[in-house]
Length: 126
Image (cartoon, rainbow, N blue to C red; front, side):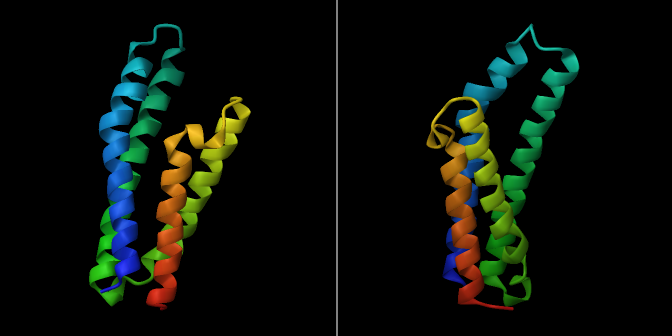
């Protein structure tokens, strides 16, 4: 078993749960309640919210597959750097909004998942 891939899977799963349950209350509900945004902007933002939900679930499953079966050892080559890019994007958006980067949970959660995913490559290189 690739323990680092299992930890990346756990990190992605925790991120999925935080995003879905806590984030849904704090971000998605107010977005849907907003009456000032143009409809296309509002609903595209909601669509992007769900893209993130699906991506996090897929990341958790893919890292779990890597942890359990070496045939899936290539998944972290894509998902590790992707998670780090999403962390950097989160930090950049926070900075643009005038907030500290760690104010957005996605900055640290994607960074952790990405770092564990990349570390999993060294535990079981393809």
